[in-house]
Image (cartoon, rainbow, N blue to C red; front, side):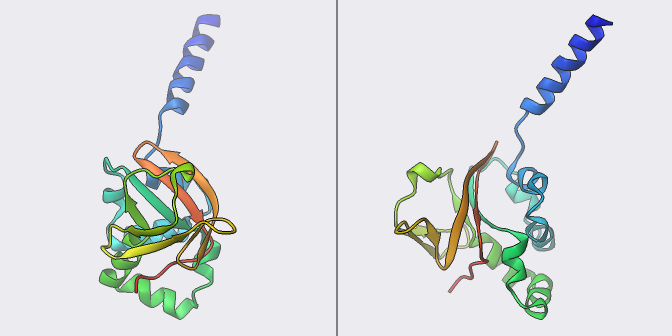
Length: 150
């Protein structure tokens, strides 16, 4: 019996030590359900499960709730626009909070986010509320608003 418990403990330890990709990490956090739905609608799940690395400025469900429901519903149905908005939240590479510098950062979407570090970190008009949620293919920084490309 002790041998069985030891093997089970080792197996569970190995499973919990296995890192998850950005999508699985976000889903497991429980506060990114709308983001997960949007990623699926845009066909970006496989991309963010890919090797990366990526830095994702991830809006919470509360951030998406700031968008009027009719506007959000329209966005979720417009795959091209949705893809542009979502990829605007992604920066190539893995940028940890300690490495963030103020200035312009090129996104996967192609345009630039403006990062400010005065009075906390913000990305365009969104405030970074939690940093350095690591995944095996990048990092997630939680933001309090959805940012829109110009």
